[in-house]
Length: 214
Ligand code: ADP
Ligand code: AMP
Image (tube, rainbow, N blue to C red; front, side, top):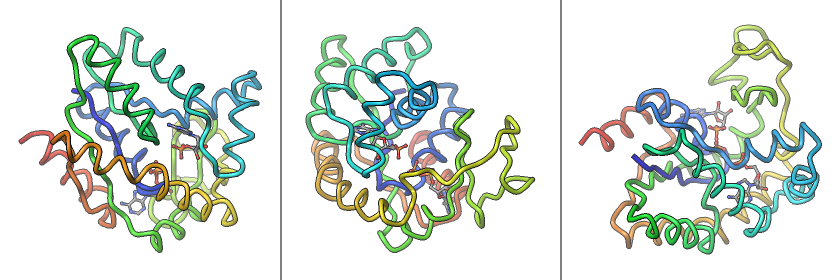
């Protein structure tokens, strides 16, 4: 099962992708997590990506596509995966399609988690992330057991640099200009499924499993 999560930054793609990965036994592949791990480890890739991420801009396609294709070529992705944060541009989607077509494969579902911009701004300010293990919380909706500490690995939680209000609006503009056109791209391919992402996260997940189990 090959799934793409679409939606604005903060729509809940990562939250739902992790739940899908657990339930269907496929890896959760997040380009944002891969970049953040590289930033934490101070790799050359991380240093380059950070320049764009901190401004709320997209990392250039050449860099991002290579990382993603390397990742999905790994053994654990053989039976499928759930992509979170990739593709974010039409050229990225086209490269992925071509790479899959070369192996006689295709994307099965593109799930658009639909959330209006007003809700996004509120969600991002409350998001707290663990940069060690990638777990995500929300100070009101999904609080950790102990404030400021990751339930999974005990490391401190942070407000991501790119979740600061001045960057969120930039990320939303970039989303509308460069990523939203993917909704039509996948609709034309007949694989688009839209779910109402303003619901409680368990209700969003129920809507997604209804699609995947149909
Ligand atoms: P994305 O991966 O699309 O950027 P996340 O999954 O990280 O988004 O979610 C953004 C923030 O909103 C996080 O703090 C998360 O805990 C919270 N969140 C996710 N889904 C919901 C929901 N259905 N209702 C309320 N808050 C949510
Ligand atoms: P995310 O964790 O998905 O919100 O991604 C955080 C940031 O990483 C984005 O704002 C971009 O700067 C960068 N990024 C992640 N995925 C991609 C992608 N597919 N293309 C370009 N930039 C990306």
